[in-house]
Length: 157
Image (cartoon, rainbow, N blue to C red; front, side):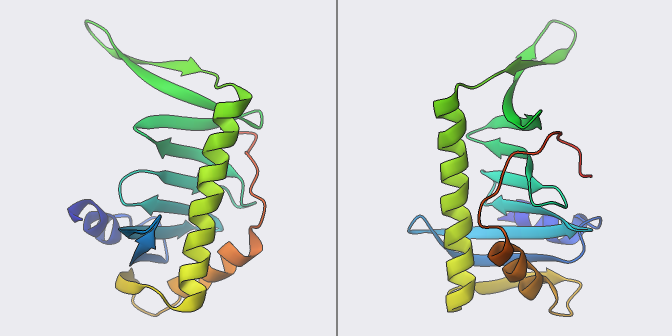
């Protein structure tokens, strides 16, 4: 919970941003959403986390303690390897089944988020700025993104 409160306070590059409480997969969940321009970042508790570019394409994720990035419209899992003097990131290409499973789970969560907002089944735990623009913007983004694809690059633009 403290991590989400810190995001609400500290993620100043994300404007607007909002913290919602609702049920996802039948369990209580805090969902943080923030926009940088037209790019969206979504945090479902601390894991999973999804980052989308301005075209609504998945560019980065953090799922099951794995860093994931988009590369040439495929997902690449990044694994930390601790060396003697440094930590290195090792690339692992998932097979098609693992990639599709990750995308299916993401789409399921996004649909649950969209439905909860549409039905008013949420509590606003915080918003910055407090002008009420974050929720309608998030709802509009979710309504417009029916089939999210993988970005060509992990970059925001």
